[in-house]
Figure 1 (cartoon, protein in one colour):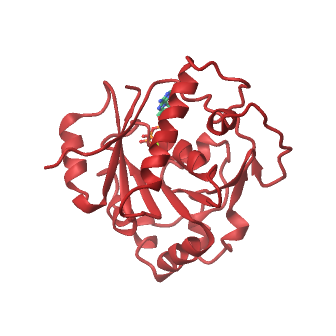
Figure 2 (cartoon, rainbow, N blue to C red):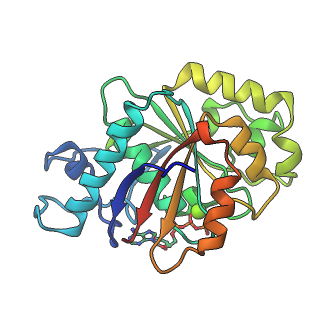
Length: 248
Ligand SMILES: Nc1ncnc2c1ncn2[C@@H]1O[C@H](COP(=O)(O)OP(=O)(O)OP(=O)(O)O)[C@@H](O)[C@H]1O
Ligand SMILES: [Mg+2]
């Protein structure tokens, strides 16, 4: 088996990666509207960055990952972020990749919280329990009505997983799911799917099948080696985009 490209090596403490770091500026002016998430917690505004700081180094790595995605031969537009185990850093990685990608010119990015049981990205972005993909797929909400924007990231939108009781595994086999992907691809340049761990739930397989490419996250002193081998073997080689070494 070929060695998978290492997309980036992200050190610990990326909780303070900022727009100013991504953009190379220290300005940040925005008054969040009702639908806008203020990004405390995950993408904090910390002002000028010390080039030696962990935040700065991490942001450099996310920019590197962005470049590798943008220049990938397969030009994937639906990217699943997954990992062998829970807690490897899928949600953290998804959010930061989506944010970094959205800072490019003409790059509207939709971050889709596809962790239907834990709502990882929605929680990390302090969205609280709110309607999202489940409601849209069960025809009780229009897509526009359940998207949130993110303060300071004008081209980044978040689709929460939603709160309606439903079976995700069945939901992802419906015509409506495919219609959603089609609509999202016409409205956004890139979809980042914050997914579950690779074998934790049935819907992993369906999300993998729907994606154009998969980014794996492994975490130092956390990810199980056998699980990593199984995770990697579960994805067709042509879909394996790269590996993010988290906390390494
Ligand atoms: N590079 C990092 N630096 C600092 N904290 C991190 C880093 N990566 C992840 N974490 C923290 O570790 C915890 C787990 O990370 P995260 O939620 O991203 O993992 P996950 O793989 O999405 O988990 P789950 O399997 O539960 O969805 C979170 O509290 C997150 O803030
Ligand atoms: Mg998660």
